[in-house]
Image (cartoon, rainbow, N blue to C red; front, side, top):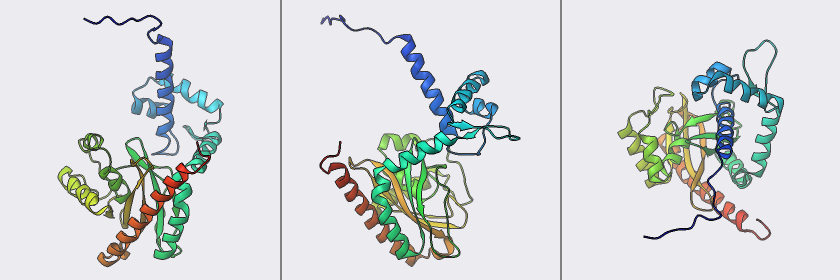
Amino acid sequence: MTIKSTAGRRPAPAADNAGTEAAARVADVLLLFTGGPRYLGVSAISRELGLSKAVVYRILQSLVSRDVLATDDGISGYRLGAAAAALGASALRRFDARTVATPVLRRLRDETSETTTLSGLVGDERVYLDQFESPREIKMTVELGRRFPLHAGSSGKVILAFLPEERRETLLHRPLDSLTDNTITDEATLRAALAEAIREGVAVSLGERQAGAGSVAAPLFGPGGEVQGSISICGPQYRFTPEVIEHYRALIRAAAEEIRTNWSWLRDRPGRD
């Protein structure tokens, strides 16, 4: 039997654990504002997170006092405040993927005359981080900052396909909610679509996340090789014929590889921490 000395080591104080839990609650409250209604009330947040109304109210008041959340006269509920907007803008400026993706996605928009987008993986969902709108009169635009499930649409599916197996399996065993009549909600069908995305390096959607919209997406891998988001070409579904989709597959694959290469260079350049 080996006896290990515990001299100099102390268990984490209860106060530390309580502080961690409190910080997690604040983060959970804030994350609710990245999707769903613009305004959220105490009762809705309490139900969603399983917290007492008293706890939720204290968190909300603390965030309001720091301008992270705000209220409007005559409207019941809370919304994101000026400080939250400043944090989001600062994060985007410092997000290397956006820096290297911007010229590539602009060029891709010009080549295709369709909207191009950048999505990021946030928890078990994804959000649009940027878009470059089509110059056409009839075009598709996306809502930046809103969270979407990974199984709905090409940008989410291609992220889901390249997640580590254990994490992907966990998500596949959760309920697959329908966003449109074409959303894949059958696990076997979704698995087949993910297998195709892995083979092709590209995912396609025809009305799966938004009715009447077509898109082709490729995964965006970080310098360490992990999937961190995706890029897409999207537009009205009627323009996404089989021939056009095949052409876009090649374009989006090449664009994703260019972004990955530039991202790695940006991280490894001299003088960068």
